[in-house]
Length: 90
Image: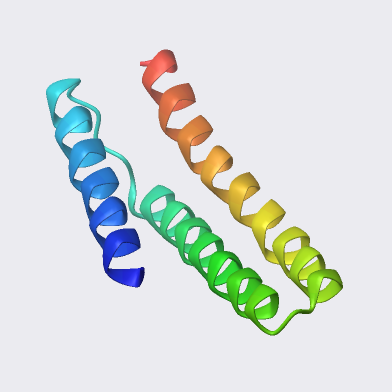
């Protein structure tokens, strides 16, 4: 299963870099860092949620998904927003 998730994550990363190059958008280092931390938190949330569900702990799975998943989505959204706001201002 993690092999498939790794393939999907790699495809998302490669396609986003390709799309950014096509649109002549150059993200700054801190935008890459914020987005990377967001993706790591997202995959951490998936891993822990699936682990808790396998251990038959649905309450802990929901808490983990909320505790790590929501900040992950916020960080990824902030990274995209920073890139596109700077692009719009130029």
